[in-house]
Image 1 (tube, helix red, strand yellow):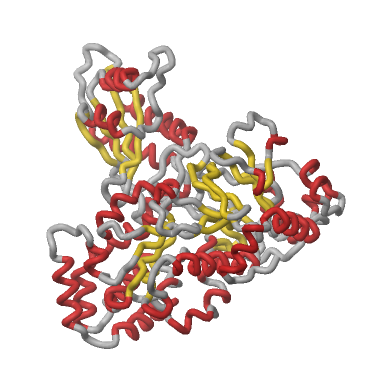
Image 2 (cartoon, one colour; image 1 turned 90 degrees about the vertical axis):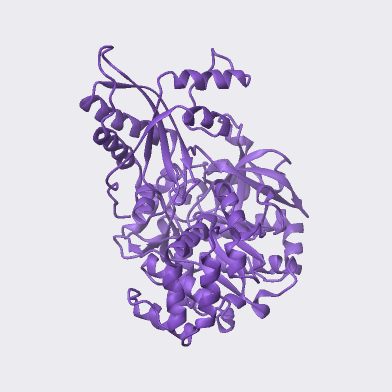
Length: 577
C-alpha cells in the first residue's frame, strides 16, 4: 500500500478502512503465501477466507523457532517473502522476556510515515509551526546494537530508525528540527548523550518549543541528570567548551559547533533558575517557549504524569503514536486530550490487524476485523505484517473508545499479565513468585525467621523508581528473640533482584531502576490489610493477599507499620542481550 503523507489522505484512509485492510492482507499474503511457514496452511493461496480458516492464532513462542532459524542464517523465505535485513529487539514487556522480530527497510519507512503524519496532526492544534518557529529538544538515544549468528543487526525499533539512511537523509535535517545534532543521538554512551542533549537544549533555550522523548520516564531521567549536572553545564556554556569527560569525538565536535564560544549571560540565567530551592516548573522556566511535552504517557507511563506536571507547570503532554516492536498501529487525533483520555486511531494501511475479545474463553472464532470491533469492548490485537508474523498476539489489552470516520479508536489499557514496572521492564506474577522462592531460601538458611506475608509495589515517588517488598516475619521458635540481621536481609534483596529478567537488570545497570527494597512490617500487619479490604466490601471467604498493591489507602496500612528497611548492597549481574 502507498504511504501518502497528507491530512486529506487521512480522511480517505479512515473512511475506507475495510477495503484498505483487505487490500493490505492480499498484498501480504501474495508476498508471503509460499514461505515455509504459510505454505502448509495456504498452499500458495492469498484468499482471505482460507487465511482465517487455516492459519492459527499464535503467540511469539509459536513462531520463535522460525525467527531463530533466519537469525541463525537460513533464508528469509522461511517466514517472509521479502528480504529480512535486520531484527527489532523488544523491550521485554510481553511476559518480561525480550524477543526479536524480523524486519527490513519497509518497517523504517512505515515508522517515518507514522511520525510525520502524527506531526502534521499535532501541528494543527498549536498555533506555531515547529519547523518554522522553533526546535524540538529531542531526548533520543541508542543502545549499541548486537548481531545474530548470521551477522544481521539486532536493536530496538527506535535505534533502527535513528541509524537508518531514512533518518540520516531526511529532508527536515536541513532545517535542524532538533536542538541536538545527529551525532548526539547516535552516541553509544548514554551518559554522554544525555549530557550533550541537555547542553544543546540549554544553549538554544530560546528556540525550544517542544520537549520530545519516546517515553515519559526519559524526560524524568533527563531532569534528574540536569539536577546533577546543571553547575557543570553552566560552566560549559560560560566558557564555550565541552567538559573533558565527553570523549566521543563526533559527539564532542558537533556540540562544540552548537556552543559557538562563551556565553556568560546565558549561563547566569540558567544558574539563577536552577539555584531555586524548588524545581517546580523547571521546564518552562528554562525553556519558556515550550508549548508541550511529546512522549508516550499511556499504559505504565501514566505513573510519571504527576512528576512531569510538577516539572512543567502542567504543560500539555502529547502522546502522539502507538506501536510496538511487532507492528505500528496508529496516531492520536486529539493531541490536546488529557493523558488519561488518550486514544489512538488505527491506520489501516500499515498492517492487517484482527482483534481477539478479552473474554473469548478460548473461542478463537470470536476474532473480528478492525472495522467490526464494538464500542466499549476490550480486545487484544492479532497482527499480520509484511515481515513474517501472521495472526500473532502481541499482549496489549485495548478498549474501543470511538470511531474516526469508519476506523476505530482505542485506549491502551494494560499489558497482559503485567504486575510490576517502573521503567519499560515487566515483572509478572510468575517472576515475583520465583524470586520470592529464591529469597526466602536465603532467609531460611541464614535465620530462625519465617515469612508470614508479603506484597509489593513499584515506588516511583523518587527517580529512579524501584520495587518495594513488604515482608512480615516471625520467629520459628517462640522463644527466639526477634532480631533482624541487616546483612541477611540485604542478601534477600539481592536474591530477588538476581532472579528478575534481563530488562530489569539492564535498567538497574543503566541507573533507570533503583535498588530493590524490603520493608519489614510489624506482626499482624497483613491481618490489618485483610481487614481493610474486607471493610471495602470484600469477603473473608474469598480474600487473597494482593500480590501487588495498587491502592494508596492499602499502602498506607502497610507504611504505618514498617519496622525497618533494607536494600541490596550489590547490583544484580547484567547479562548480554
